[in-house]
Length: 151
Image 1 (tube, helix red, strand yellow):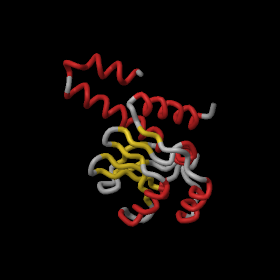
Image 2 (cartoon, one colour):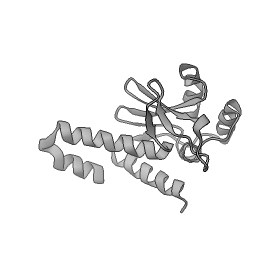
Image 3 (cartoon, one colour):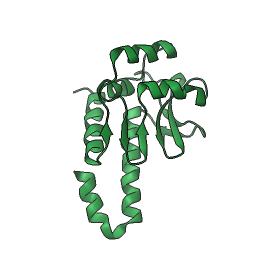
């Protein structure tokens, strides 16, 4: 299994274990449309996610659908592609900073602080941070949250 496929499987398992709502796959035409609008291929980790799930919701985290990402492009600096929001925060991929494998780093769309090296690594990190907040805010129920995270 390729690394991006491994990360996708881990992200799916983590999302499902946290009761996330995963949307059906994005249509191939929609992926071609976003690539045409951007003038470049999508980052592999985002493409593989959208090929399986055109968006997701887990607690306060929302992974945007292809259509939502295109609609929200006007809300961010040129060169960024919005991919997720968590409360008031919006996260975007920086296509101008692609690495040698074509992956785009994830930034906070407003502060430009780095949030992840790839979309799927970002997704896993933000889900882990949510888990840590739950344990920190509710230490008496830590065993419950550990069981929840491991499911």
